[in-house]
Image (cartoon, rainbow, N blue to C red; front, side, top):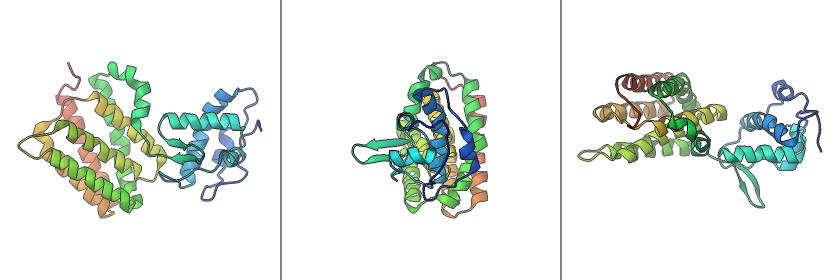
Length: 262
């Protein structure tokens, strides 16, 4: 079934049959399946988001998705494979497609040439973008975090604090859990688009930055503790302000210290 019109005819339970989805692809009369797939990907992402699916949930069957979105099975499958390539969904043979925890490492494979030429100015721009969206992510997480997500956030924070315990600082463990903390926060915000963008930005930052501000580690630990407490208390305003303050301090550090590995 290779329809020219992209439309929602049978909304998946929980999805909003919004005009914006119907209108995003009004017609694809002359595109091959690969180019159609590229155009369908944003529709699928919006569909997944509005369906309220969470990591581990099964997507509707390909047949159902094909009917819902109004596209042929071939173009749909290529779109699903595209989402799989960036770690958004995974295929289980004979079972179907499942929403995965977004893995920014998959996307960073395609960005590795860019990272080789990353300058301090590029890193600063990444951090400025994080500052623009992560406080909102923390705010949303206070409203949407699951009990399991909160537990994982706390475990990540505890591992980060343990890595910073004197006398020996485990830099790699600290960086890994710092990054994981921010990714977990994004995954619990309830907005899959923000989560994807945030995970890519965080991945870019930690792939490019090598200089850890050791003298500021106690302050960094305290900032993460404050963010965690705000989420646990469901204090959205506190989550927003503490996250903004944390990221602004990181930006100030980048201004004063070279980041690229010589």
